[in-house]
Image (tube, rainbow, N blue to C red; front, side, top):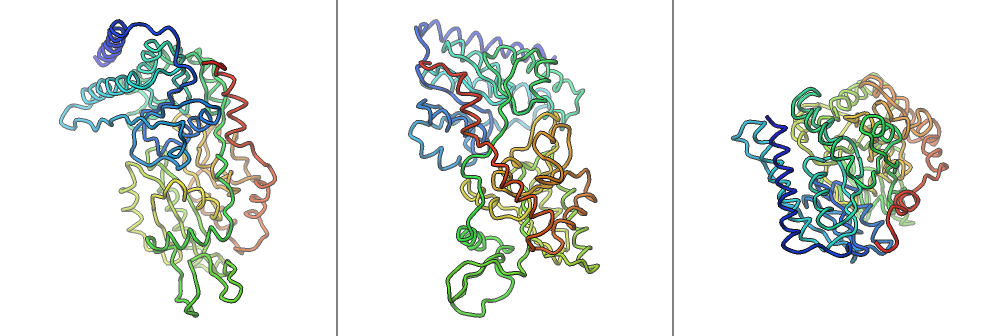
Length: 465
């Protein structure tokens, strides 16, 4: 039932585009040096899409950056004169309808909205689309490319059907339709990018799609944060979040203190007091592929270690991000009775997030990958800040996290708790695993996004297109 409806919707899109083409007349040439970079998602929470736009603008392209405007993109994007933000209206759904019909209606409405938006921008020579979500965006982008006589580039961040499978199960009819759709329309792209070698091999073996691996790399602003900037950030966050406030009152009236830093009244230098708590950070989209109960159970175990006499620091655990399960996990957090651990779940400004990563002591990643073929960008950003990571295991994680070199890989909450105990024992000494991981990250001098993009993606764009 659903498959014919989807086909009907896609046929209607094609007919509509052809009608517009007939009315407006065929263009003799593609839009010179203009690119549409699109995602059917929140632009502010789609860093890879923002990075594509900035890289294209850096090479003189005019970019229409298209997507939902729920969260503010990075200031570099907003201030770039070559990048135009093009909002797409988000469809909120019709809860009164049956699930299957609601999904079909959503696909139809989003298809019309997206096609209308793509056909009302300046004519691009390329459309670079992030997938997922691919239904209906891949088909719509392909139709728009026919209309504009443009080339289509799909950036495979993951598979949409595996993300759907987390909620509905792999064998659900909607998931099977989405899988068929991605394979069919994915073959129509002129070029394909993907995020891991494992995904590149899977695209070829199972879909007949040739792709080029473009690993996620940190942007230049993901780096270790100088102590002065750390202090200013902590003071800023302390205005709204209790865990960043100093544990005791200031002795001197002129003292400036946070939970992690203080200013020496004589020298005016920023210092980190020896008894400060350790700062643990985890970034999330609060979705089904990240089970945060694993982290909460590990923190409860860490609390018991302290109660039993282990020489461990108190912890401030910051969990950043927005998503559908945030309220659920905040409810679980509120039920915890922790004496040595404080947890807060702020939504940070785009410019503050890399500063906080560059100030933290350890990162935790709970991303499991719905396909087992993508890598967590949050770990890429943490490594850019030379921040060691504990990450939950999945199939191709070894392409990014090297166990016992730049971090640790765990399989359950008990193993994570043991890793936290081992890494923070004797904190903040400059000895032990935590320090050696950070030194290894500093020494590796990993490739940054701009260099990687120039090597891998720039050759796909013609000089005059």
